[in-house]
Image (cartoon, rainbow, N blue to C red; front, top):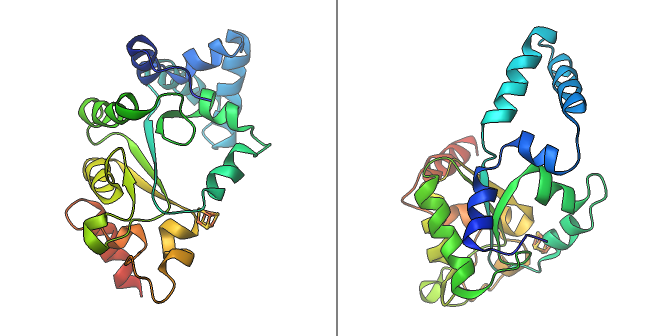
Length: 210
Ligand code: SF4
């Protein structure tokens, strides 16, 4: 699970590089350099690029991820936390900077919701939003409330300035069972509910492919 969200630990997690995380996990400098050489070879770049890969991993902080939850059964998360290759703990603690996931994180309430604002402010245009589940559009989104506000509001706020959006599972991508007729909450795949952010371009591109 995510570490406790003291200001110090949050700040540290948001600025940690891949190298620092690997060292914290007990990876030696020698193994790290070997990993960089193997990565360069696997990408077809040749050994000359290994120092550049090492430099990037030593200096660039991991991209923060906000993982949001709308109406869903949460079994996408259940599948994730039961993954074995790699283990969920290795993904969360070593591979990505998962700064917000209200299902997995230790923080709750206002402390948790403040992390979204903090990531948006500090990493404008350079964070990723993963969306599990979808937002109900009827009654101004009142059928799904997160942190005292409609999930639709949280979704719009978080995705407005993000670098990329991951549609996680069938609920987010296609509406799934919540969108089945007669669909009284006007459930829809989440990409349909966003009108005023860069995602609309993605949505338009998807529609043009139909
Ligand atoms: S797509 Fe939706 S219904 Fe399917 S496992 Fe994920 S959250 Fe559950």
